[in-house]
Length: 444
Image (tube, rainbow, N blue to C red; front, side, top):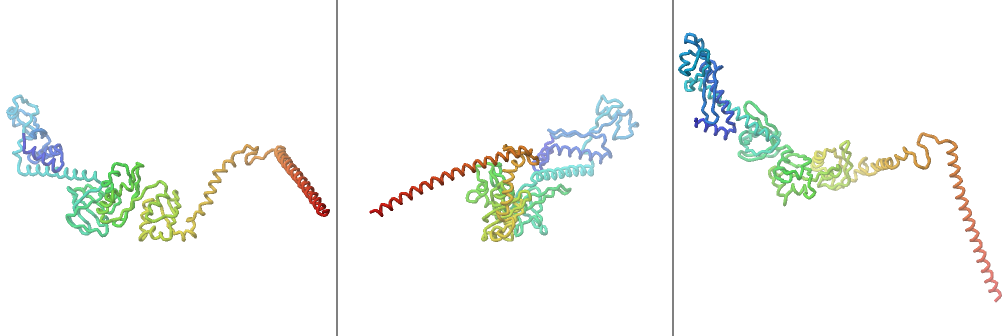
């Protein structure tokens, strides 16, 4: 058993994360290279390694010829006399295995074999590091600031160095060497010199991943981050949704006394974070996105992805935000182009008043209520549109209608005459009574 080789392979497997099978393949390749350098060719050389004991054997396959004079190539042929020393059963024409002692290799052959093994180890190490960080692409890792390379920053991620370009740095952030920071891995490239890792501190996904790590409800899927908009170093808006009606999405992200969100704010060096509720209704979503401003009305067009928003006069500046930041982030968060006006401005602006939409709304209601009656024939005997009724039938309907009207008018006239007669009679009686009373008074 080759204990030294076994211990060396175990150490490499633990430290470099290189499998033993790969190292065994590298050793076989190096021995074949050494044989080729030593003998000039290695086509007939074979290497056998016991993977459990790490013992190895190198031999050459040679053809047995009758005498030494018949040997044309020492690398490929062997005389019968010499073959019998190795195997007594050797016969002319047989293929016999001739062991090659690795200790007999020259210095150059040994050095070449060593270089082959080292090269293979380096390649596998790069491949292992690349695979390790390629799996972490689009994720957040913790690194240590090493040094400034021009305006870029070199960050040590453990087994590899990453580069934080100037364009991916937050304006105003200054890092000191040995400082630990969290970065978002943008891209991992495999190059001859090893993996090239690009990281970012401005990407919106950085905030999302930080919340996933901090908030348990987001990690287990109870709360979802539906949309996120960020202006790095200044403010972030995030819309969240809860799949469980008993869980408050915003409250879960904020945490008790703001503990969860404050931890993320500290990591982002004081960047403000607005967390709002997601809503499938575009109007409600836009209203939430423009918080903390109060909204009077929202007129959203889902087809054209535009929205007109009316706010109180004293809330206009708050809704727009400093340099338009609040409105800009709300537009990114919702995906709508938002136009904001105060109540005073909206009075004279088309599209910002309810009256501008009432006509269309009434027309739609009319079409829904009466459109089907125009197409279908009612039960009253009318004929479908575009078809004329026969003259006789139409006339009979008119005559019947006129007869009914005349009868009704006659009845009303009779009732009026009866009422007039009764009134006249009562008036006559009243006059007679008055006359009698007058005569009595005169008589007295």
